[in-house]
Image 1 (tube, rainbow, N blue to C red):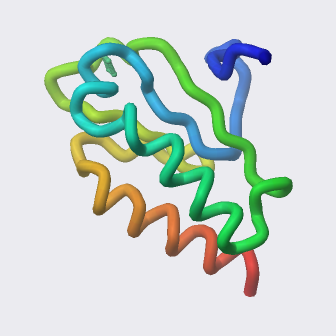
Image 2 (cartoon, protein in one colour):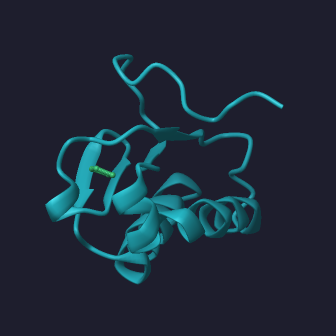
Length: 93
Ligand code: FES
């Protein structure tokens, strides 16, 4: 299986989850599977890409998640899932 962490320098319009140890411990470790389930639920699992990234050098403000190029910092799992859900709903309009 291919490792989910890819070249972070490339522009990315999907969902990028920091999987560094601090963000992982602050909820991003569980977020990946929840996001995958949500995308499946909305039938977007083939339309929206998810990738992990290494530490974004902002651990104290984490967890870090980027949705469609917009960084969301320190929101926590529930709020991030709300944002992703809102974005999913916009995609299926
Ligand atoms: S682990 Fe995510 S910013 Fe450091």
